[in-house]
Length: 432
Image (cartoon, rainbow, N blue to C red):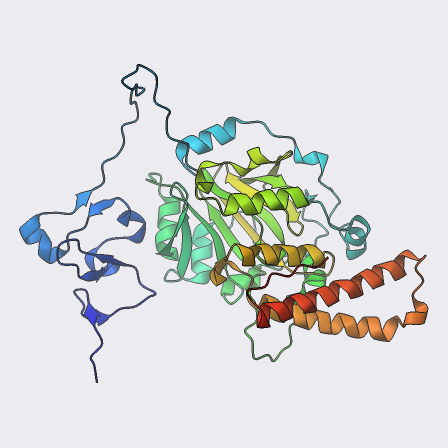
């Protein structure tokens, strides 16, 4: 029987869950934790020398930093050579974004009180535009006090929890211990901008301190329709903790599976750049997402309207299905949020899902068990339509009857789309 290859100073097998770095001299691989190299620091190393090779080849070679005050470059003809495009997430990008003006989102926002935000309210307005609730009163939401901080998050989740962190200037993901991130967050001297937006905590002690808004609990397919016993794993996307330092930036995206999303800013502020999911905008977004120079193009410049929405401490924002958005963190911020599928805009949820498939979005960034949730929701809703609304009750002149016919058609689209996804994955089908 062949032996399993071992690596590093510890001579252990390869472990996909642990960060490793390759020595450029001996080509052996080493756990970052064993040789004192943190994942977020590795990008600064040009040539890595392991502890053994350091003895004969000297220390690792670090990347050279660009000077901050370079003179303009002129070619042989005396004309100025064009400068490189500004990279998304860079300090220059953030400075320029802060200085720009955008249409105020108040032009499209609905602003009910917490008590006014009911299922009937959203049905009346079709939940097609973002909703801002300025005060949490009446939302039926439970949150920690405003004094709650990132150190408290660490206490309730655990220092050793491995979390996904975004290096904003490079717009790339890396793994860190929660304890290491909190230490970075609380440090007055930060050498880079790191952002946490995907820390789901439903299965931790922190979950006991956070209850999602009542409207979310009423609408959510997962909350209401996922069975107690299932061979599939229940999607945990309802409760996220977002911890961002000043100048964090998340580029334009549609939330996975076309989910709607809620955000509550506990401390600090978030600025959202919102774009309506019109057919034209969705087509532009898909083309931009598949572009090789995506990180050199600000998507907001490619559409007719990109709205700026400031979400301050104590505000709660609900973003409906399909809305394209980016997020800037102007000051250190701690926020809570979550995603949910629902029955108010099934068609747009399917369109967003189809876009993900055409873009070959990795499973890691898709809604877990999306098709399964659709089956559970469709099964229950079709039963309700059959038992409560027989054909003789449908009156084309009555709006409620038209809505039920449309709902039935939506579910036919859902089931057809799921069948194509399962049995003809290479065929892209969308609801007419």
